[in-house]
Amino acid sequence: MDQNSLETIELEIAILYRRMTFLTAAKKNGNLDRSAYLLLHHIRSFGSIGVKALADEFQLDISTVSRQTAALEQKGYVKRTPDPEDRRAYFLEITELGTTEYLAYKLGRLNRISELLKDWSDEDTQQFGRYLERFNQALLDHSKLNEN
Image (cartoon, rainbow, N blue to C red; front, side):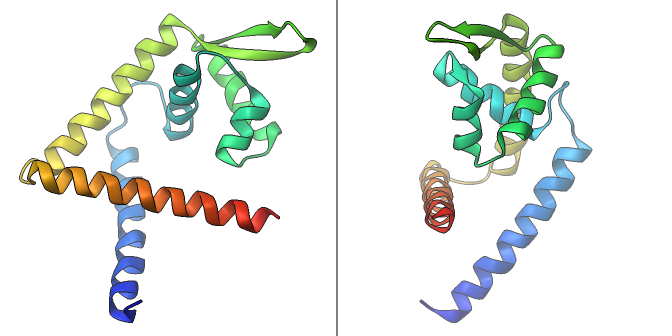
């Protein structure tokens, strides 16, 4: 691996993280933060999911995810349904209000990203998306290896 490329990537990731953090704080859309958005996305994608599965997906403590989902439930964005196999456990489902908030937040993010990439070709944006997916998968794979 070329050391110069590696140093460029390392620096650009640091800059990206800083700028995205600033952009998110400066242009908040609706009532969601990043963690709420990601949780709602995952719950919406699966239709119904348990806290443990969410904790595993995001590599977080169950207590952290429980706290975050409790806040979503308190706002009316998700609801609990009992697990028919284990009445002590429950699944989370997104509500109509949760779906509305999620979609509004997502639209705001898409609009900002679209504005940033307006001068990029379709080929460039597709390739950028593939590289981001690949990099995120490498991060996930690496973190799973380090768990063991």
